[in-house]
Length: 330
Image (tube, rainbow, N blue to C red; front, side):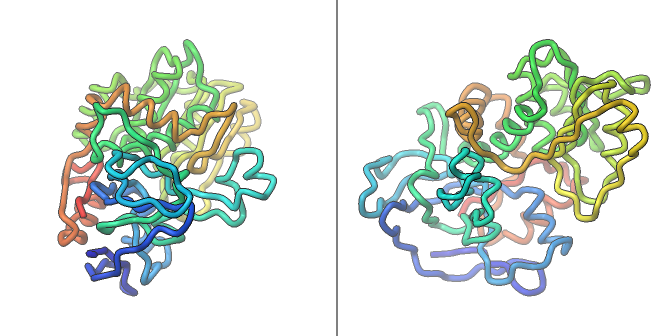
């Protein structure tokens, strides 16, 4: 099969790899679409050490191709979204449903072979069958939606709240939708590029304005990198408000500690997805996708073939290209 593989220089090679066989309890997926996310771009830009030899790709939609021994379903041909995170299943975090905190967790595409290939094998429990109205290509949007579902839940967004979102990439825009679904009365957002601002408006978010300081119940930070957005978040949050940090920072961010403590703010980190109240964040992400697919599909601004993988990553990294979500079709 064809697969994209990180090389030692931080770019990707397209190589031939054996088609993987599903072990007992696992399933094989014929991959239809893979999204490029911010973590992938950290590797591409060199912000994180290159994982040479690893297959990236953790935003995956596809079709069940084969089942390993002892797997009752979903049956081959089923269209699925793939949850790429698994824990050991035995530690206290896993037993509590917070497998994203498992010390031995595996994230396919980051710490293990991912989906930027024609086929991917994962534990069968990672497969989420999609409603008939959704395609396998749609399925690649479920993973970032699950990230946002968890962030909004941890921020305790509720009915009537005012929410500010910092950053209007895929996670920021999906956070708008997730906050609205949680009952937020108003969502405002910071967008650097015109295409982001237009998309935010379509999703029901207004632009942040001067005078918005100290007025939001929750502030959701989605930029990370080298940004100074935690300081902005402290300024925007009302006294007693909550800041949820979804962005991945390359260097330790600065926090205005005096203002933070004076306003008695709460800062909550949010990492991937887990379970709460018997339901997984990924399941909530799939439900959001099913309910809001027409609003979400325009976020996919560019599509590439696997042979165009480096062009795809360059396009995703260059927001002046008008890119929001870039997907590849292996």
